[in-house]
Length: 134
Length: 287
Image: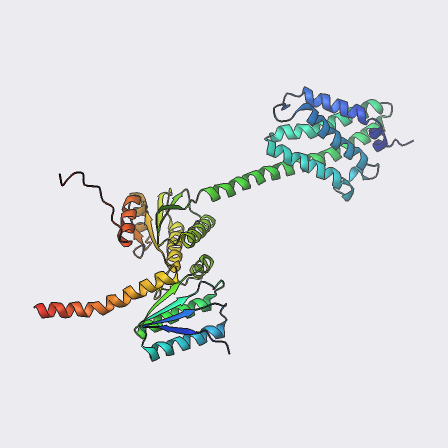
């Protein structure tokens, strides 16, 4: 059965969708990805959909689901490289992918993820510093 | 003996063309600025030629039949051409109706001995030319509508420029009413430009939008959401007090969207997000 490879890069998981998703593939991806997040304790998930030219409401929901699930598992999701036509379709379908971050390309997506992760990592440290001063 | 109207007219073709041309040239509505007399003669000759070749005694009362296809085509061509060249409906109408007059005149002189045949022939020719006249108007208006359609397309095309004001910042000034089709064009242009230029900020300036109702607001919200999906951020600027008032009165929630009153403040905000700093050069402070 076809599967979409999930690559691990340090704290992040990288998924590049190079073929058009069909429903079964998408549900598999959703399940695999969550398993991987759990297994690797990843802090961020980056999904590159620049090669995806067709979406329907189901795909939109899967993307949204992945975002929400990762959030519960303490990982940020960034969807990068969305085609204009795909964006318009998703908006017309009323799917705004609220729980998902977006970026223009993989590079910017990575920067965004790093920023998010360091932001969360640093916060407790700063608090500790303040505590120690007091 | 029954006179063959078609044959008679064919025989008298030269005379008819001469009469027709004279009538056209004498008419006050002749537009020599739009079409030279030679061109007019050529056009008239072609039409008359085809018409007389087509009509027979049988089909003269059936102008909508397939046999008249060539005539209809020529008339459509002439009408559309005239519509594009800027002839008025009256001038185009006069053109075809003066042909009727020329034809009737010939019938009148040639059949004056037999009044019954003359009346019958005149009735038939009258009917035929009326149908052709109606066709002229229909195609003339169609030609005009095509012109209008093309202009509308052009306006939509040029009315949605996407300007790169800074590296990574796009500005899209919207002037005029926003309807669904226009929003579609605006959205598409913006998203394509975002991909092309790799911009992360987009500013939608609506200071040229005369009124914002719930539908327009809906369109704006959609555009902003689409840009967000692409991975860019969208600011709406140029919100006038009246617009702010109507938006709040209509109960539209714009709180999820960054809104600024002027393009300048939107640009400043964009600079802030991109961590850019614009400063006035301090002159000779050290000296």
